[in-house]
Amino acid sequence: MIRAQPAIGRGHGLAPEDCRAQLALILNSADFDATGRERRFLSHVVEETLAGRGDRIKAYSIAVEVFGRDMSFDPQTDPIVRIEAGHLRRGLERYYLTAGHADPILITIPKGGYVPTFSARSPAEIIGPALPVEWAEKVPTPPRWMKASWLTVVLAATVAALAVLALGLASGGVRPTSPEIPRLLVETFDDLNGTHAATAIASGLKQEVVSQLSKFKDIVVVESAAKGEDPSISPPRFVLAGSVNLSTDAFRLRVRLLNRADNSVLWAESYDGGLKVAELVEAQTDIARNVSSSLVQAYGVIFQADANLHVDNPPDDWAAYSCTLSFYAYRVGVDAESRSSVRACLEKAVDRFPTYATAWGLLSLIYIDDYRFEFSDDPAESAAALERALVAARRSVGVDPVNIRGRQAEMVALYYHKEIDAALKVGKQTLTINPNDAEFMGEYGERLAVSGNWHEGCQLIAEARQKNPGSAYYEVDLALCSYFSGDYPQAAMWIKKSPFPSNPVYHLLAAAIFGEGGYKIEADREVAWLNQNQPELVKNMRQAVSVRLARSQDVDFFLGSLRKAGLGIAD
Image (cartoon, rainbow, N blue to C red; front, side, top):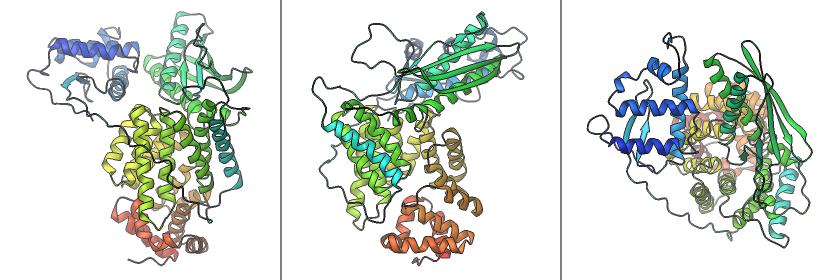
């Protein structure tokens, strides 16, 4: 962890040349996600502050001296400086979480103003290497009651089995040194007007799209297909192309994703925006986020294209990538049978590619599912599964500190380890790294909610579902949110939509909802299922609920609902 020491002495207590050196580090970093104007903004306010003119830094002076606005600029009617400052703050936060995690000086722009602050940082603590995972440990046989729908099992198990086979029986020759990761070529957007303004808008839109796409680490974004590329690197399989057309007061971007193998159109969309500066800046950001969310999310367009792609005699780099696809197929149903095959596949993948951060993160999430969905009567077995999850998550983050799946796994593992504050801190930081990752947003929202912050957590869950409706987890989470808000008809509606009838937690939540809502027939059915299939869970109900809900009042309310449903639960 990096600690910032408070500024001392006059202003900031640091030599101006050291602060300027830090500014240069930021501006020259490829990980500093900022436009040219935002970079000029940062340079201006830093130099003014170092020169002792921090009191002159106002929205008006920035607009006139940095953005080239005329003397009639009114910050009350034109929010451009405030908008750009928000982008700049997020860019700095992300930089210090990535390339600048060990930089000696922290430069920040506190909210409510535009004057930067400078503080010296203490040396970063070194994260020790993760302990090796004990692969030889016996995997428990899934219990009989856990039967998934045949479609989910076949989908996940087939992809996983194919990947395991390819990993174990790789053909001769030079073996790949890294897993297959989709490569996406973003072409220059065409200017249909042939004017300087249209060219500038097309260029700005492309750069913003590239910036947002690049936050997803499970693809490689390429801006040009360079000749003489390393032949060991696969050429981009996908191409994003677009065109910009201007009218009197608006622009339209048409964008499409192509399969490079046959030039088939996998996805196409049109976006409109205004040409006033504030409108244009906001539209560029919104469009780029929408494009990235549609294309590179889990369950997004590229995921669907690769999940449906059949590869004959796949090499082990493709097989390792297929393991990640099989993980998301498993998550559609969350059943024990497919979990076992996906777990084996991912273990093979990280054994073949030890630096595959995404595979380590997904493997950790599988181990977490072993812990939270397998109700063993042996506490040591459950503790071992959680410990494996923590080890794998830290291995992922150790390989790639900004890998979202690794940080997601670390957050969830810490939560179940009862390190709730640490878990939520990881979640907050990770959402800053990529606020467009709906899979993470939904998981972080759930952690916030079940830790007691129901309002903010449930808002994030709803937003995640809007961004990426392909994940089945959101219906369960929204059922839980409606239940704790007292809207039992809404909770019943969401739980009936959830596709997890083979999962015991589904039946547990359904029993609470139907019991509290007075749905006797449905409650009786859920109680019968739990008593027949999960006697150990029923016997240790308070412990099982306390593992998931952090606040004692939430635990007591939930247990009360289960009693209303008809479950015999001891106080």
